[in-house]
Amino acid sequence: MKKLVALLFSLLLLGIDQLTKWIVVNTLSEISTYPLIQDVLHLTYVENRGMAFGLFPGEKWLLIGVTGVLLIGLAIVGVKEVFPGNMALFSIAAIVGGGVGNLIDRAFRGFVVDFVDFRLIHFWVFNFADSCICIGVLFFVISYLSREIKLEKEKRAKGQNNGRVSN
Image (tube, one colour):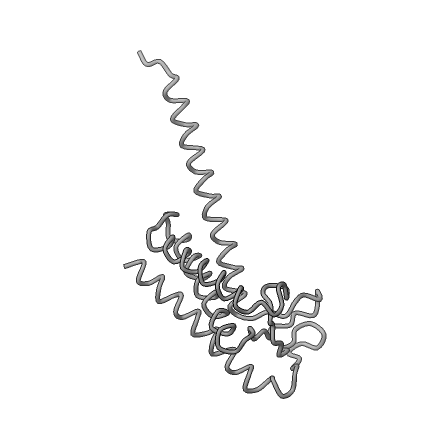
């Protein structure tokens, strides 16, 4: 059941991503940028023909292939629950949902639509899918590290108990 919910979560994120990009393409592509908070947060239409941070520009087919393979691998890891726990599963679902959103853009538009322009810190323009991927990775790392810490504590406790002599 939780795998079905994770799948639906991933599809929801994908739907939100595609809806926001559709809105941006149909409204911002003509005006280029719209300030929500002047010089802090703008909606800015950008066609990213590379990957994160504009790396590998013009390598559409390479990026599609690598992204596709990684997403299939992640989906398999999620389904097989290689990393147990709800946080790991839903983190993978967020990464896959965001990754598929950007993959759809790259395959059908030839570029990824970016639009969140956080100008306060002069960061790259990004989109909802990018946020899903980053947040998913963050929570996956937290899930993994917390599980490893828990296992290490259990291992130490078991080691201490094995060394005791009972009367």
